[in-house]
Amino acid sequence: MRISDAQRFDIALNSMFRLQESTAKYQTQISTGLKVNNPADDPVAAAQVLLINERVTASEQYDRNAEFAELNLQQTEGAVASANDVMQRIRELTIQGKNTTLTDADRRSITTEVRQRLDELKSLANSRNAAGEYIFSGTLVDTQAFTTDPTGSVVYNGDQTSREIKISEFRTVTDGFTGFDAFAAIRNGNGTYVTDLAAGNTGSGRIVPGGVVDKSAYQAHDFRITFTASDTYDVIDDTTGATVLAAQTYTDGAAITFNGIQLTLVGTPAAGDEFLAGPSQNQSVFETVDRLLATLESPTALAADAAVFQNDLDRALGDIDQAMDRFREVQGIVGARRNTIESQRVANEDLRLQLNTVRSRLEDADLVEAVSRLAQESNALQAAQAAFVRVQGLSLFNFL
Image 1 (cartoon, rainbow, N blue to C red):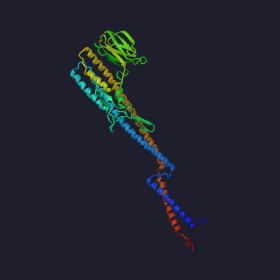
Image 2: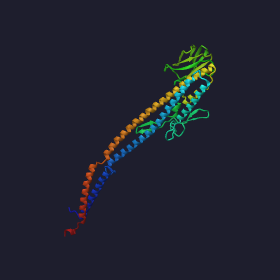
Image 3: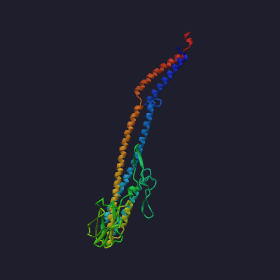
């Protein structure tokens, strides 16, 4: 087959263009260190690299999320630990207050410090993070968690939903606690039931809460121990109206067992005095301290008043212990969440290392090979250019 001059020209020109493209490709690989610089270089590898880049970017965002959650949890843990320390001090002051030799001035001094500690608790419950968000307001982060209403009661203004932060494709972590869960949803008494003296008691009898001795027999009913005489009592289930124990002989300090619980009465009750036991209720730490303050400011001159005073301080100690137990529980949960974040960060880092290894294998250039191929292609390009010049100058007159 006869090849025309025009065909020779096209062949030489196309060869030169191909070699120019190949030379430019290897020059780019050497300058960028990558063998896949655009999808045309390797469409399959380019698509895989794109997916890897997306996963790496997502993993980096998960780590930023984890850092945000970690900071919030650190602050939550610190605030709750401080609140526990405050309650420990209030507990010490409560025990001091039980000393019957204290003067009115001593009690006023204790009351003043308890009020100061209450203000500390309110401040801790309204802690904010670096972004100015209230960390105990649930998802209502711009709303102050706790405020004092016109009656002097501390009220919770947040919601009961905690934020869930995504720290990996398949894992989320709660970045804090609502103020309701941390400071308000605290069971009073011993956590199962709470005891009290009926208003109007005239004797010096007091009630020691005790605890549950038979869980299978316990029912969340309201009970009343009524003294029909100074040495005789009945136990009545106020929920059903039934008399549980009748005409029982009272012995100072002897245990009384009913409804799966065991408690103790001490002192000298009077005929008509009543002692109460009912299911525990939620009582905020602020209400606990407010009740304590009211007790510390109550009269103690009469024997009956002194009995109420000591009984209410005993109840305050139980409520304080419940609050401290709750704070320690929150600290434990927060610690577990922080451990989850740390383990996920390690997993995220390992994943990125694996992804980067695969990406490197897909797109990184072999520089030694690229330099060698560039030299080969450059030499071939120079030869092609020289041949093209010769072909371009040929005509029929060269052969006449």
